[in-house]
Image (cartoon, rainbow, N blue to C red; front, side, top):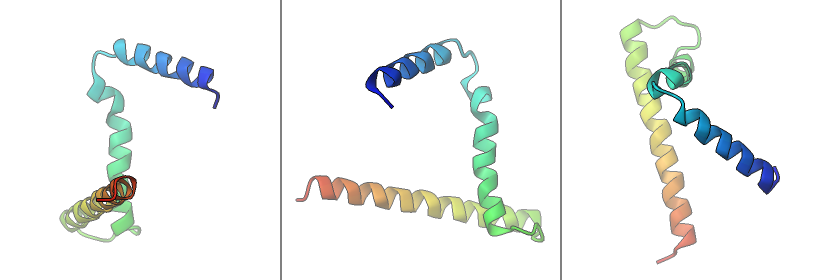
Length: 82
C-alpha cells in the first residue's frame, strides 16, 4: 500500500473511532469470534461438556498469548542483543 493511501486510511480510521460512542459494542462480535476460535480448536466436534470445553479453551487462549509474548521477547532480543 502506498504511503498516501496508508495515511488516508489511518485518518479515516481515527475519524471513525472518534464518532464511536460505545467502543466495546463496536468490537464485541469480533472479540467473541476470536474467543470462539479456541473453543473450536479444543472441541471441533462439540462433544465436550461446556465447562470442560471452556476450561480447555481458556488454556488454549493462554498458550496462544504466551507464545505471542515469547515471539515478542525474541524479536526484542534480536533487535537489542545484550
